[in-house]
Amino acid sequence: MIAPIPAHPQSAYPFAALVGQPELQQALLLAAIDPGIGGVLVSGPRGTAKSTAARALAELLPEGRLVTLPLAASEDRVTGSLDINAALQEGEARFSPGLLAQAHQGVLYVDEINLLPDALVDALLDAAASGINTVERDGISYSHATRFSLIGTMNPEEGELRPQLLDRFGLMVQLQNCFDPAIRQQIVKKRLAFELDPDMFRAHYAEQQNALSQQIHAARTRLAALEFDDAVHQHVSALCIDAAVDGLRADLVMLRAGRALAALQDAAQITVAHIDAVAPAVLQHRRSVASATGQLPQTSSTTGQTAAQSEGDWGYLPPEQAGLKPVRGVLPLAAKKA
View 1 (tube, rainbow, N blue to C red):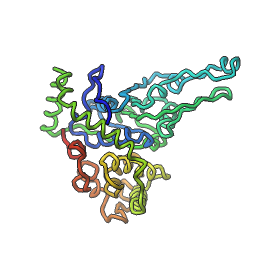
View 2: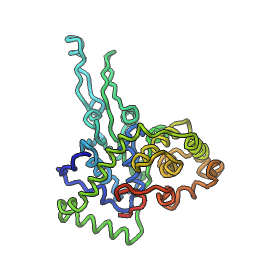
View 3: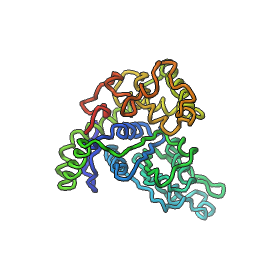
């Protein structure tokens, strides 16, 4: 059991109050449970609550820490710096922490990450995936832990990330404008209520927020106990081959994401249903052009289903079809529209 979530100084919009974004909520929760997944890239047009969701996630974590990386940040500001003179004179490295160190055990948020210099994006992704940041200057090095959930957002109208950098992100969610009148009205009503009285609005969702926070904490402790059997490995391989992905990063991320989802759902074991639920976010930015245009077969050798059939209308396998059950009435998020 963990302590209730403290009041956020900036009155963050509650994660549990997000509407119509089940794919995004699931991806963010998985990255919070296992930061080694490699972060989440959220792509979508303006006004789709990309930054709102990222900030809301930080409040669910034990430290509640959110570090925002500005686009104008220098490499030293991001990775930290070493005082070489002190090292030469005193015989020990004097390290000045950067944003990566400040984000440890929290959320590192980068808005418009597609406009950030490639070298800094590389450094962020390295630290997110490995959990370690190493700074080297003139033959002297210093390393420290960097266990954080990396969230990058971008508007594709303002430019894309290079394919090499896209592949480094663990998960990707592609948001679209909402044209469902009922959902739009629900989003607006909640937003207006939040702006009118943030404290009352947050109090209304306090129980759900605490339940989510506890689920994340419990899921982290269960990760190591969950193992992959041959059927799960076979299914992951089939999905990645069908998508014609380059290398094995997709296989590794899919296994880790499936394990994180199983832990979040308090499942006794990892199943192919968990893999189907996370596969779209893993393959969204890795699927080859040939596969996407149908030049490669889209039928999985292990399931006999097409990619579209297995993902469903929302872009993932609905939990009710996958046999996943809610935990304490909070999950699966895929079943929630509010």
